Image 1 (cartoon, helix red, strand yellow):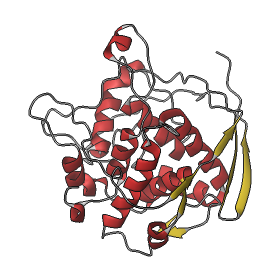
Image 2 (cartoon, rainbow, N blue to C red; image 1 turned 120 degrees about the vertical axis):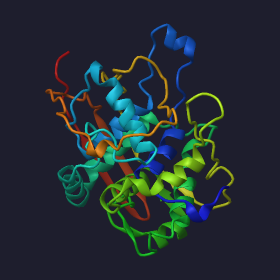
Image 3 (tube, helix red, strand yellow; image 1 turned 30 degrees about the vertical axis):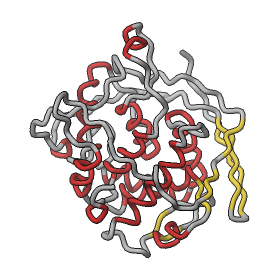
Length: 302
C-alpha cells in the first residue's frame, strides 16, 4: 500500500487515478494501421480542462509535443501543465468556481459527458468502483486537508465535507469527480505537493522511460459504499475531432530535469473552435433529491 502518511491529493495525483480508469487503449498493431481511440493522456487531460474552460481551442498538430510535455508536467506534479490547458490560470479558475456555484447542472453534465467518453464504466474490471474508493482513500490519508474542508461533490450541487465523504454510504460518481476536480484546482495553491506521491505510484522503471501507474489503491478496499451515476439518455456518441496525436503513446519521463511550464513564456495559438459536444440529457437521483438537466448545443457544419 505504500506510505499512506505521505499521500497528497492534488491535480496531478487526481489525474493519475483518472488516467488509470480510462477505457482500454488500442494495440500497437491498431495504431500502426492508423486507428485512433482518442484516449491518450493529453487528450484526456484536455477534456478535463474543458470542464474548467469550455472554449479551449482545438490543438494544432504542431502543438503535439507541447501538450504531451504539459500533460507529464501536470501528472508528475511539476507544475500546472502547459498553458494551453489553462489549469493554472487564475481567471479560468475563478470562472469555473462561479459556474460550479451558479450553474452546477451544466458543470455536472460536462463531467458526465467526460466520464462517458473516457472512463471504463459498468464493466467487470470495476475500474469506476476502484476509482471512487481510491479517491476516498487518498482524501482520507491526506492530513493536510481538514475534516471540515468543503467539496461540491453532491449531485444537487450542495456542499459536503471531507468527513462526510469518508462516512458516506452512497456516492454519486460524477459529482465526486467534479467536486474533487474543483477542489484541487481552487483550494490548492500548488500542484507540486503531490510529487512524492506520484514518485511512489509511478516509479521510474529500470529500463525504458514510460512510468505506468503501479499502485493498487482502491482495489483491495473493504470500504462499503454504493455508487450511483448520472443517467445519460439519448446521448449521441460523436467521435471527437480533437485527436492531433499520432499514436496512443503515453506520457513518458526520461529522468531528465523537467521544466515547470507555469513559468514558460510564449503565446498560446488560438483559433475559433467548436467542440462538437454531444446532445446530453441526463437525470440524477439520490439522497431523496432529483433533478433533470438538459444540455443542447449545436455543432457547426463539417
